[in-house]
Image (cartoon, rainbow, N blue to C red; front, side, top):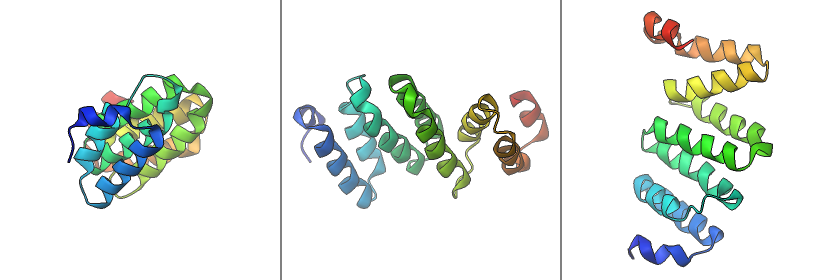
Length: 136
């Protein structure tokens, strides 16, 4: 594979295609590196950040995934609902990462979606009660 520096010249679509190919090969860590190398800290990064978050989840790096999702929100606040949907799909999927649960819980409470917030707490109920209390 070419050095990451070569990818700085790729368009967003090309980055997404190459990242998808890497992910299909099970190389989520390399896909995450590639996507991160293409970030320009502008609104066009939104799609890259969502795929980056997904790659981080596949690598079992939930804190990095949450950071990517929060960056997507900060760059395109009008798509907060889409980010919340992505975070919920990830959290309620196979892995119930507490870090994603925190984000989903806080966003749902902020939107006054208490039913979903309670569902998050139930999913996290298998965690230590003291940890839950300190979180919320």
